[in-house]
Image (cartoon, rainbow, N blue to C red; front, side, top):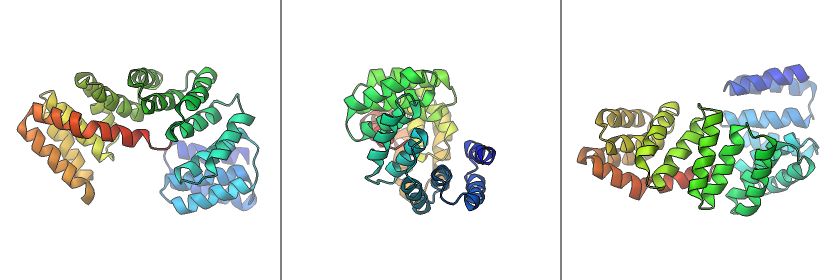
Length: 277
């Protein structure tokens, strides 16, 4: 079972959620009540956008009363994304029973920060940094908590630390760029927003943000390239934003800067900070 589970999780690491789910479904036939298998099957179903099925798998895993802090934290994080009120208890139990497990402390801290309990969240996240100082995800979540607490300069440092550990961490790079815009450091932000947007082509709003930043820096060619990437991926509801950004870019760099700094960056940062890990 351990080897089969390892192979299934490796598929998830590669983004092959369908392959991961199929492998776990096969494993579940032999171990129908195993909380670990059910837990990771919930993760796989969530990865492929089947939230209803994921919810059932997480609930089944929880009913198996697992004791492993890592499994508890994974179930809790999955249920938190689905707004289940029992997520908090699972995450708290994971942190209490596994105080040496950085992932458990991180997930609990991440939950608390998004619930507005910043001081307690930072206690958990600082402990997680002590346990796993080389884990970029820990620094990202600490940065999120700091940003939610209004400590943007410190959040920037945390996001930069995450990128030092993993230069390909595009989520941290997007958060860093938006935080720098919020701090009025648009020129610095450009160096992070453009590569983050290129690495995350499905994020239409990030393409628009990066396009406006490029336009503000008088890089019109890059601005329209990013805007076109946004248009190609845009759903119907995104098109008004793309059109509004195009109008500002046509008006020149100052108009693009004003739209980004005064109307868009803050809401985009808040929206991303609120997302569950």
